[in-house]
Image 1 (tube, rainbow, N blue to C red):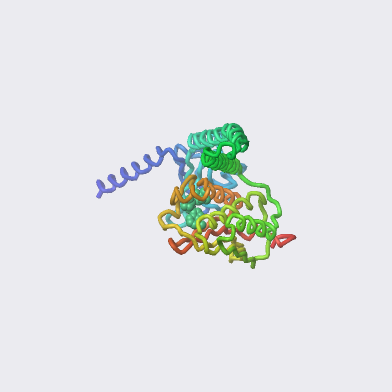
Image 2 (cartoon, rainbow, N blue to C red; image 1 turned 90 degrees about the vertical axis):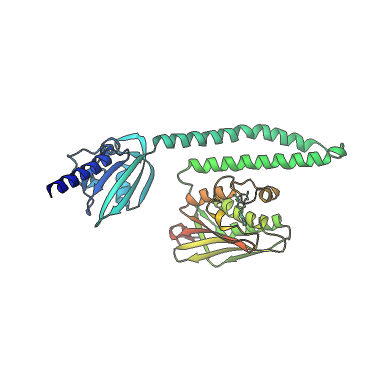
Length: 347
Ligand code: ADP
């Protein structure tokens, strides 16, 4: 009996030692949010002391820090916030529930990851920026060339123009993505939806050139709070995809309607559709179901990444439903807090 107790005690000690040595900060909280136990990293990252902080209310102890604000907000996760003990250290934090109302707070040091991500972002932004000027020059000279003067070169000149325009579009899309990635929020303005949807519909008709039936249904009759330029770009990306991935004779329906939690702008097409295994990856940069089809229709492979970033900055979500051979629906779902009375106040 005594040896069993000793074995159990040793096992418990091992578990506690392993948790103490864990590189993530761990704080065990009781059902009232009081500290029951912390590991060593919790001292380095959160500035907690042991046993001095045993029994204190963690949200109060961390008051005034972003982590403290997050604890009080009741949200499950906090990404990339400064560590309370050292603002140079960035952490991701989450609360994991266990037992009867108890929770573990876990904070992970992501300083190095965040730095590498910043290096990657800067690199992409700089490369795109550096490519812009030479591309503009090449494009300018190509426009000056008159194919009629050298008919033999006419197809070559036409192809060079198409490709230089494509490169220009990729660079512009990469710069747009870099700009969006650097932001934590966008300007909140009153976005009049009716004229915006009417413009997007006209743009879609110009792109389709009569090859599709394009329908706009507006039953929401409300406006949005957000960035007009970025929302326009996100919505028109979805509509232009629908035109580009729907064969001649197909139908494209743009719908703006209320939902139980807010409102939704969706674009439904009767196009090629997308096999289920691709859906989760569609918003990754340069991810394409079929490269040749995307390039053939003038795609850069960045459209849906831009859509996702714009929606994230509006706390909105992109829902995708699709059936190969039947068509797809891309829906932008906004919360009630983002809705405004058409022409006036909160809807
Ligand atoms: P692209 O410039 O290649 O269209 P996007 O990021 O806009 O890039 O879209 C990524 C991929 O998702 C596309 O290459 C295409 O394979 C697929 N896709 C997007 N929209 C549709 C749609 N409406 N119907 C079918 N496939 C689509």
